Length: 237
Image (cartoon, rainbow, N blue to C red; front, side):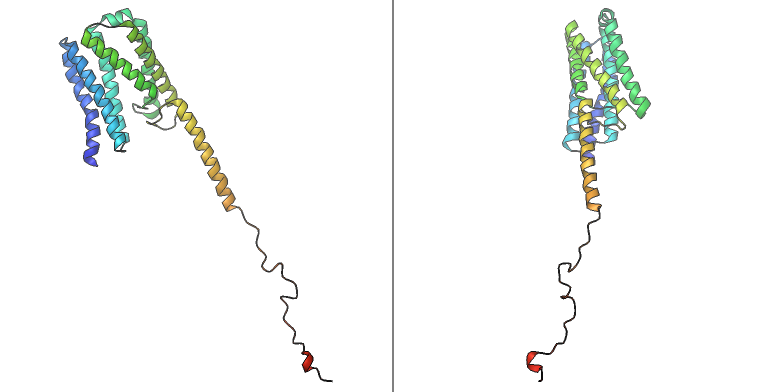
């Protein structure tokens, strides 16, 4: 079991190891190498979650490692794009500023409330992450960016960051399997209904039952001792 767990953690750690190597490639101006590295990092992001779910051994430590790798890689990817393609920020300053602000607010919400980087594994985050990865990889490998893809990826990322902020404000504990705040709300109602049913059953089982009266239908004479009356043939004239 320990060896299996190390496989999932090693995949998350591989993303951390890739970051300084990709920084070096970005400084040297080698965009295609950075793009391939991002593609590899995306594959490890999928595989570490799959391995953890497959073995049913998800843990708080693994979730924190995965969240740290994801956030560092995301921030680094934004910096690499700015370094290699400064025209993206120049042409879309307001869009990037709004996206970054909402994202940083979601990080701050988790740090303030839970004192850690929170990875809720939202469905919207997966969609946004896939779009951002696609935009970054295509831009770095091709050497040019497509504005429509940037706008779609930024919009999806703002939605997922806003949902993460709301979820962290509503949740009392970190739930990496939440999926969506709407699903979490429905599950909470279902749990309350189940608890109410269980409480009602427990109350009925503990309620006092009316005592049964033994022999209540018996006649009064049935319990009286039988008299020793003389039989007819014993009567003397």
